[in-house]
Amino acid sequence: MSTIEAVDLHKRFGSIPAVNGVSFKVKEGEIFGFLGPNGAGKTTTIRILTGILKPDSGEARIMGYDVHKDPVKARMLTGVVPEEANPYPDLSAWDNLMLVGYLYGLSKHAAGERAARLLKLLDLYEVRGRKARSLSKGMRQKLLVAMALIGEPKVLFLDEPTSGLDVLSARKIRSLILDLKNNGVTILLTTHNVEEAGELCDRISIINGGQIVETGSPDDLMIKSGLYTYISVKFDRPVDPEDAAQFFKDWEHRVQGSRILLICKESAEPVVRVVEYAKARSLSIIDIHTSPPNLEDVFVKIIGG
Image (cartoon, rainbow, N blue to C red):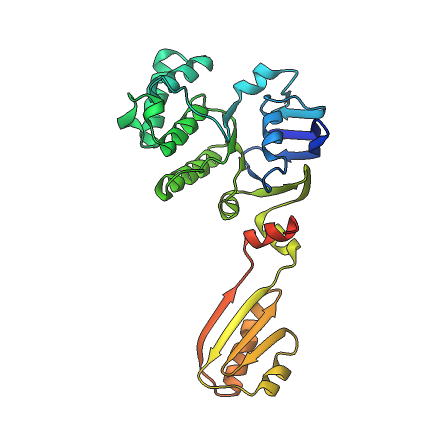
């Protein structure tokens, strides 16, 4: 059974199709990335899956429960960090957490224990008595994460969880996400930080124009993209352009003075050939540098940028 399941979701706002036939499944204990440009349909899909919006057609399920037919059962299994949200501004950080704990049916003692643990984990314990309105944006974002976790959900939706955080806080959140995965929590993550998605996610779906255009692991997406690796080699003296052209004829290349640039699908065989070329001509390799495509390159190519 899939932990999160979207089945042919459709949602229009007037004449605009925000979500147009979105389907995917997220396995138990998986971090599933959901990426797309602004207006692609990410947030609308998340709102449908978390029960905030009702789709025009299609089904959304959490651990087998239909989000709109069994909303209470689905939501009790779920924690959510929305893209645009704030804690209750006139409640303290502590009271925000205690309130959400009560909504999950926790006793005062259990809610207090979990609140203290989460506040310490996210470096908020010292400001637990301050009203949320007085906290910095980064502190409020971390408090929202704590509020999503106090019910110890089986499924976690994170919509831009590191947005607005400083480098250290963002690293802490990413580390926490990996710890949650290791403890069996299923996570659906949206982020504009494509490299963050590549670091965290087991699989990624890319959505554009309300439709999913590609799904796979970060490595799978790299391979499917057909993008190239660049290998730049500098020798201790100039090379013969005609000789180099003949030797490296299997790959697109450029020769300029003592430097050769190879453009290839993978780097292993070309690097071996570079070493063979240097040995056969008594050249010393001063510098060799490979530049493989990154996930941001793949993302831009897939969405047609």
